[in-house]
Every structure is written in C-alpha cells, then in structure tokens.
Image (cartoon, rainbow, N blue to C red; front, side, top):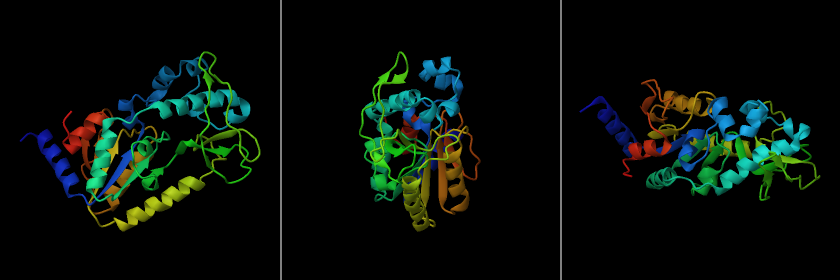
Length: 278
C-alpha cells in the first residue's frame, strides 16, 4: 500500500472511531460554494476592483472607522457581502459533514472564523457553532447605546458602479448608524456578548469530551489569520485522544504529532476524508 493510500485509510479509521467531531473552518470552505477567500491583496482586489482603485487592503477596509468616516462605503462593502452570503447555497460538503455529525449522535461543535452563516444555512444547530469573529447577519449600534445585538433582516442596496450603499441599517434604539456585529481590525467597539455566549457553550462541550476520541476536521484555514489552525492544533496537542485532519489545497503542511493532511480543496477534501463519491 502506498504512503498516500495508507494515510487515507488512517484518516477514515480516525473518523470511524471518533466519538465526537469538531469541525474547524476558515474562508476556504466556502470557495466551492462560489465565495471569495480574500487570499492576499490580489485575491481581495479581484473580488472588489473598486476597492483596489482606492488601494485599500482587506485589513484597511474591514475597519470600524469607516462607519464614521464614510458609512456609505462601509455599508457598500458589508452590504455586498451580506447580499452575497444570503444568496449562496452551501456546497454538498456541508451536508456530508452534517450527516457525519448525526452519525456521531449529534456530538459535534463548529469553530469558525467565517461570518457568512453558511453552517446555520446548511442545517447545523446554531447552539453548536462558535463564530469567533461573529456574524454579518447580526447588528449592533456603532455608538453602543445599549448592549443589544439583533438579527439583520434589512435589505442593503448597493450601487456597484459607484460602490456606495444607497441606504443602510440604523440602530433600532437610537437611530444611529448600525454596523455588523463582526470583530474587525482595530475594533474597540465590538460587542462581544453573543460571541461570549457561543464560546461558553463551546468550552463546555470541550470539557465534556476531553477524554473522548475526537476527530478534528479543519477545512480551508490559512496561516494569514491563524485562529482556526491554532485551535485545532491546540486541541490535538492537549487532548490525548484527538486527531487533526487538515484539508487545504495550499497550506496543508502539518506536524505528524497533530494528525494528517489532505492537500485538496474543501469539497474534494471532505469527500476524500468521508469516503464519499462524486
């Protein structure tokens, strides 16, 4: 048996023997659904050529200061993403992962840096998802007039030629400009209440499953913002019966002590790991 085939068999055995599943996901999991992964400035500017003309990087654009300086631009960026995520249909890999979670008696958790809400749309339990950067589908007041966080049900129309929002959400309490409840760069006004509740549930799940066989399936998590990769590696190192399975077409390298890697994109990698045919 070749080394590659032997590794795939080890991965399948790891998943088969798992009593619990932790799915950790970065932006790469959404590529097969047609979502951009913003890999580097070139990838970001390709998705947003009008931002490229301003020579703004992703970290410069994803900054709460724009809601004060130029709210129409801020909401053009987040409004376009909101509309895109609402229209996106999660690819088949999400359903495969959900089936796996059901096979394990619903003993799973999602740890993701994505703000797009695709796991909820795919049918995963919202109480078993920890969105570490929170969600574009929830709003907060830019002035933090209260600690309230509410669901974003508003339509945001964007003039894509001018890249300006024609209108944008307002705080339902004080009528100031509202912003997505997303942790941005240089963000000192982010309301972390909802995220903290998710984290509490996640840490409780980790504690309950500490000594169980856990399959950690990491999909599309890069090194530029390493939060997701670090979480999976931390658990694989600290939890005695945990094994990390890293799915990534480019940054697939992994230390042997953590587990295995599959050098494929999200959908193909999930198929490979779960032995699903096309």
